[in-house]
Image (cartoon, rainbow, N blue to C red; front, side, top):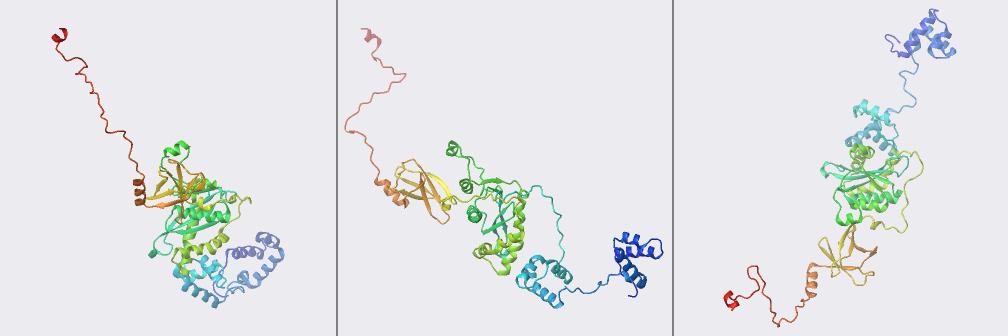
Amino acid sequence: MEGHLLMSRKELYRKTVLELVKSKRITLVEASARLCLGYRQTLRVYGRFVTEGDSGLIHRRRGVISNRSYSVLFRERVLQRYRKYYKPHDLGPTLAAEKLAEEGLLVDHETLRRWLLSAGDWKRRRKRRTHRSRRERRLHFGELVQMDGSHHDWFGSEHGKYCLMNMVDDATGKTMGLLDHQQTTEAAMNLLRRWIMRYGVPHALYTDRKNVYITDREATIEEQLAGEEPMTSFGKSCYKLGIEIITAHSPQAKGRVERSNGTYQDRFVKELALRGVTTLTLANEMLANGFTDDLNARFAVAPVQEEDYHRPLSRGLDMDSIFCHETYRTLGNDWTLRHDNSFYQILKGNKPLPKPKDRILVRIHFDGRIQLVYRDKIMAFTVISPEQLHDQKKAQKITPYRGNMSKTVKRKKPQKKWRPNCNRLPMCKRNS
C-alpha cells in the first residue's frame, strides 16, 4: 500500500503500544495485557509490525468480498423485483423481504435495506423514541381482550373509508379482525362471536366509550323497578356470557389495540393492493384464511402464565339468542303487539298462553328473523297488516249497554246558594 493508510481506532492503538515495545519502554508481556491479547498473538502482531510497518497492522480481509456475499446478479434480480411489484405500493424492507421469501428469493431484511438505500429506492425514516410502558401485560391469555374499530381507506381513497373491527389479547398480542362498513353493533357482535368460537369466552373486554358498547341514557321505569342498569344490545350479549366490559377514557389507554391497528393499516392495505382485492367479502376471506394467523405467528408472544382464562361455551347454548337485538313489548287485549310498524298476532295454541298486558320479549336477528319469547318459550305468531288489524277490531267492536231508553227519567233541579229550598210565598200570606 502506497500513500495514505486508512486505519481504525483499534489499529491506531495497537500501533501506539507496539511503538513503545519497539523503543524498549515496555515488554511484550505488558503490551499483551494492554491490548487484551495472548502473548503468542501479541508476538505475531509485533513481528508483522516490525517487518511490514504500519500496513502490517491493517486487517488482511479489508476490502475483500466475503465468501458468503450475494452475487451481483442476485442483487440486481431482487432490486428489479422490488421496483416492479413492491415499490409502487410503498412496501418497506421488512415486508418486502417477507414477500420475496414467499417467491423463493431469500434475503435478510437488513441486507435488503442496505441495498435499497445505496440504490436510492428507500429513504431512512425517523423512528420515534420508544415510550416506557406504564402498564404490564396481563398474565393470562383471555384475561383481558381489547376491542376497537379502525376507520381507514383500506381499498384506496377512491373506494372510501371502511371500518376494521379488531380484537387483541392483552397478554399475548394475538389478534382477530373483521372488515365492515361502520363500527356497528352487528360488526362488534360478529367479531366477538368468531373469537368465542375459536378461543372461548374471554374474562373481560377493554373498549372505548362509544354507544355500541355502553349507553349514557337514564334507566326506564321498568329497569328501575327491576334494579337493572341500562345496557346496549352488545352489553346485554356480554352480560349473558359473563363478560365484563371495561371502558377506556383515552386512545392511549388502549395502546395495544391502537398499535395493532397501525400494523393492519401498513400490512393489510398493501396486501389488498397486491392481490387487487376491493370488496368486503374477499377482504374478510383473506383475514380468515391466513392473514391474521400470519400476523400472530410473527408478532404474538407467549403469556407469562400458561393458564388460559377463556371459558368454554355451555352445552346447548344458542348463540343466535345471545347475539341479537332484544326489546320488550306489551301484549294487547286482542293478543297482538306492535314492533317497528309491524303487528304480530299471538296464536291460541301457544302454551303457556300469555295474558293481555303481559310483557313479550322481541328478538331481532341479523338475518331478519323475528322471535317472540314468553317465559323462555318461543311463541308461534302470524304477521298481520294494519288493514287487517283495523278490520278485526271493527268486527269485534261491541255497543255498550245503556238500559231502557224509553223510560223517562226525572232529574232533580240543582239547588243554588241564592235559591234556597223554601216556600216562595210572601211573608204576609205565610203568616195569615
